[in-house]
Amino acid sequence: MRIAHVSDSHLTNPEGVATSVGTTVALLRAAGHRVVLHCPGPVWRCRRRPGEVPSLSVPTRPYRLALPRPPSAPVDVVHVHTTGPLGVAGLRWAATRRVPTVLTWHTDLVAYAAHYPEVPIGAAYAGLRLGLRWRAGDLWALAHPGPGRQARLAALARTLLAHSTVLIAPSAKTAAMMATMAGRTPVVVLPTPAAAPHPDADDRRRLRARLGIPADAPVLLAVGRATPEKNPELLLAAFAHVRRKLPAARLVLLGARRHRLAVRRMARRYGVTGALHLLRPMPRHRVGAYYRAADVLAFASTTDTQGLVLAEAEAYGLPVAIVDAQLAERPGTGTARPVAEPSPAAFGALLTRLLTGREVRGAVIRDGRAAATGWSAERYLAELVTLYASLPPVGPAGGAATPGARRGDAGSPGPTDPAPETGRGRSSWRSSMRRW
Image (cartoon, rainbow, N blue to C red; front, top):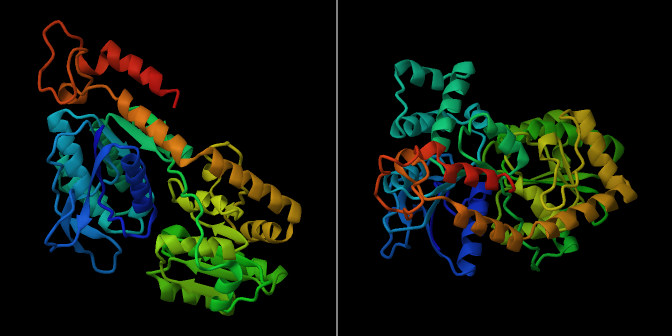
């Protein structure tokens, strides 16, 4: 199968979207599919990789801004992962060539718009490129927090989904969030699997020694950005509660590139400065050692659409504690992760219980490992490929093509053909998708 994957996130970016895209593309290529990844690359390169698009790094941000260059070679499926210039170009290109399009919804735009001014700017660009007739009042509403911004972002989401044959939600939480905006576009829950644990040079004792952490100290680990949408203040406040019961406890915050000074100020306010290890992002192949060195993964975010680090930690046998009840269900087995109310006292109590309770800790580890095994890379790949193969041909205006048409055909339905959006083929395909 010929598949074009499109992402505005370059693969070296240490965040969830890049990890998900890299995992998916690698699995498909290993299975023999012809995959071209269209993503940002350096501005200058003598021999550019297929699909690599010239881009500029964005000051104070870990990503790059690429030219809106769409795919150029014939493909059977376009899979879009982001809604930036590259993602929008991919959607438009697929629509003009009537190629089935899969859109994975990795980012909660409404939640992130409150913290990143580039989200409303990007939304304005995407809306205008996709045909939303926004006027000055709409752009003003996008630029300011409140119901007006949320309404415009919801309108953009409906337009993005209208350009898609199917939407992949990486969790039931995201599927529920997008259901009201999906219209006639089916929503499929398909989480990205965690990579299998692999040996590394650092064992638990050696890594702790390098960080200056005693071998017997209780260690909490948080992996990811320390920016406000990840709720570092709740994490630090809960850690202060843990320290009241376990004075030797340490917190390793791995992945903090921005807002480091703000985090240190919060740590000083909560009296945990001496027990905090604030580390910058690490290459992915080195993160496993930190999972092994820790005792509990503390996940304070409520804005994630999947929380891939949860499954990664569970694959390494590290128990996780969360405050987002909508991410409690584990992929693979459906068992529930330990969840607390998003308050310092409740979250701190859960963390303390997982650090000290041998029985509950053992049960959480066992359930986490079973879920990681149950939702394997092989199972994910099989379901994704089945989804690709089941996509109907695309007819005019984004509807299903007539039964005799092939993918990519430019023919239009005849005068006796049913309307594209209400034809029997579309309805039966939608019914079959409910099984996913």
